[in-house]
Each structure stands twice: as structure tokens, then as C-alpha cells.
Amino acid sequence: MSEKSLLHPRNVHHGRYDFAVLTKVLPALAKVVIQNPNGEPTIDFTDAKAVLLLNQALLAKYYKVKFWLLPEGYLCPPIPGRADYVHYLADLLIKDMAQLPRGKAITLLDIGTGANLIYPIIASQSYGWQVTATDIDPVAIRAASAIVQSNPVLKSHVKVVTQTQASNIFHGVIDKAQYFHLTMCNPPFYRSETEANAATARKWANLGKAMQQRNFAGQQHELWCDGGELAFIKQMINESQGFKAQVGWFSSLVSQQKHIAELQKQLRQAGAEQIEIIDMRQGQKVSRILAWTFMTAEQRRFT
Image 1 (cartoon, rainbow, N blue to C red):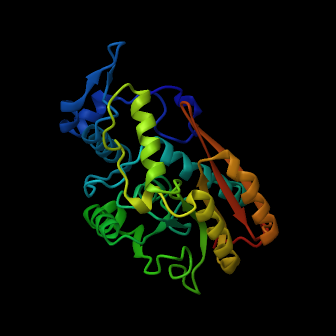
Image 2: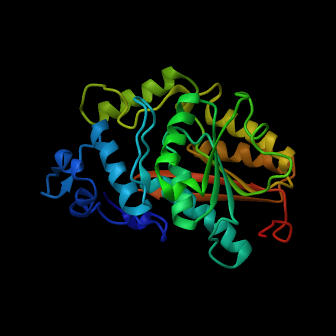
């Protein structure tokens, strides 16, 4: 992997993957390790099985998660970039608390956790936070719950909750008495299956290969929705106004820079006290976090 120095300073995934270490943690990974043109160990990142095994090894080595299995066709995310989102959210709390936010007193809500449960795993094992993970898909809920129940390190830190109202985001999962220091979301960013498939076809063409299934997979609700990420985040902003006093910082990934201005405008109209745009880079890929709060720093709670 290249340009790891672009990752967050606290991200443990800087530098090339240490396959000597990872194959000791998960011997099955050795079967899919190959050499790149420079003679260095790597995997074929277009091979879904190889990507799954790499993730299993990374989770076992760095996050003490020994069981991590996904239903066929569900999103298998690249872990280094996912970890960056968590670390940048921690930075928001550092500004408020003047210290690194650790322990179960810090609460995080992950919207659309998916079958992979990746953000709750990273957040709970990196910082010890208490995480509520939500999703609308019963298959994803079962898979995420199985990961929690199969890993003792997660049982006391992660709670998986079904969002039974598919048209809602926060309504139905934040109780009246609950307070979350942070929310996070990696929204579906395509507007349709056609758009998602076209993007996949372009990626395979750029690799000079015939189109296959996505190497990181993904179900419909994980990849696309009516209106894409812009419509999803706009709804999130609308709903967030109803939970102004129950969430310190709301946040979402935004994949397309062109959406930022419109979302900022909506947040100002909604009365956001503070808006943060945080750039994240991994190699040539650039994404950003949109974070907002309706509270002053003094109003945000840490007890």
C-alpha cells in the first residue's frame, strides 16, 4: 500500500501490510499472498476471498476480533480508511475535552453499520467507547450480532439495534433519555443500481479486466438509494434538528466534493452552531467528513 503517511497519525495501518505478521495471525491468508512486480508480498485486491482473509487477519491482529464472517455479497470494507473516520471523530472530542477521549463514558451511534460492524469494532477497540450500531437489514443485523456475541472484547462495548422504520435515520433508534457524544454514517452514495454497476464497470475497465462482481461487494441499501448520498445526508440533517440536545456531534462521510456547499447551506439554515469539514486521504482516494453540532462546546456533555 502506498502513501500511508496520509492516514491519520493514530491510525495503526501506516506503511505496507506486514504479511509475515498477518499470516502468523491467520495462516489461511498465506494461501492468497502473491508478489507484486517489485517482489513484495501483497494480495490481489480484485479477489473477494483474498480481501476477506486480509480483513480477518487485520481485525485479529489489531482489534482482537477473532471471529469476523460476512454473508455472501455483503460489503467487505477496506479497514485503513474506515479507521481514519473514527480517529478524526476522536479529534472533535479532543478539542472539547482537551484530552484523548477514552472509555465507555463516550457514546457513539453508528448509522447503517452493515453486516461488517467495522466502525463499532474500531471505535470500541481503539478507544473503549460504548457503541450503538443500527441497520434496517435483518441479515446485516444477524451477522453483526453474531460478530458481537462471538468476540468477548465486543460484548460489553457494542449493542446492535434494528431500525424498524426504514424511512427514518435517527427516529426510532435514539430514545428520549439517550445522549450520544458522536454519530457517524457511511451513506449509500449511488442514486441507483445502474449508477453503481456503471461505476464498477469503469473500475474493472481501468484494471484492464472483464467486469466481475465488486471485490468489496455490497447490498442495495449499502450502495445506493433514491437521490444518492446527497438526499440521504439532507434527510439526516433534517432529522438531526429533532435531537439537538441529545447528540454532541453529528457526522457523515461525503464522497463527492460538489455536495458540500449545498449541505453546508442547509446546515446553516437549520441553525447549526458549528460545522466542520474534515478531509481524509488514502493513496489517490479523497473523501471527507461533514460534522455538525447544535450546541456550544460548553453545552456538550462528557459526564
